[in-house]
Image (cartoon, helix red, strand yellow):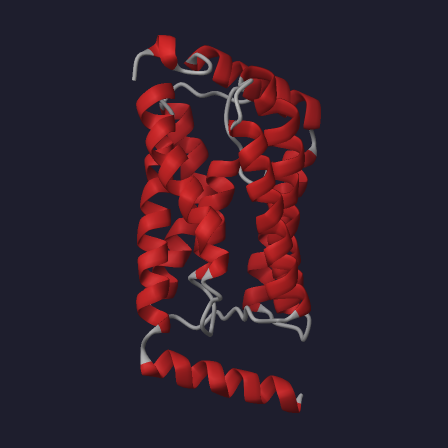
Length: 234
């Protein structure tokens, strides 16, 4: 796509991140602490672990919709994109509250499987490898997307956690993250030089495919039934 047809230039895009990161500091530190807390709650479970983890994810998506997309991306993109994605991200936050906090339909586990191993790789990529690749690509903080407060690494992290679930995942939780993964995972590398977002595209496509495949297996359905039965008696 020609740069003349883009809503903003690559320099405007990275300058927006600079303005955003400086304005919200030290929210980036809190985001990493919340991400670490979610991982700790998977490894050292309590009765409220699943609800708290889902609540953390909901908080991330609410922040991204209400603060990043609505208040900052809209400064450089005057088209309908920021409004549409703001609504989508806020809706995703609501879905996390409903599915994970209220209904407790999402249950996480530290049990090692091939699927969970991929989830672990995505989490490491989102929190550690993504910013390192950004540095190699010339995206030096604060002109850099940061985990927890920028959509792309946070979406990768979301897929990583979903792959660490113990039972079937409600598929409506996958729709918005997958759409964002495909749209931004293609647009950001091709149009704005954010090549670390190639990992976002892979996370969305591979993560969704693995979850659908895993949850259709009889063993996963039996595990889900067992988990629900144990929860009902606890």
